[in-house]
Length: 46
Image (cartoon, one colour):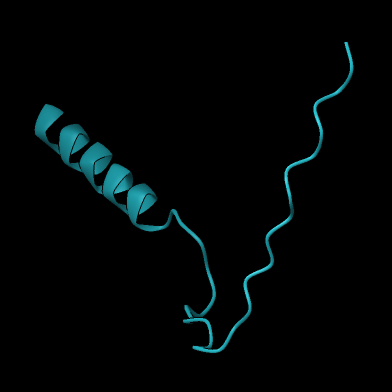
């Protein structure tokens, strides 16, 4: 009885772990893609 419960919980845990994550196609950015960097903002006066 307990072996069946342990097996069931292991199966459910493995299915739960396998279904986590982002969905959609993975892609690599273009080689000539431009990186936009914002300058650091001035610290707020105290």
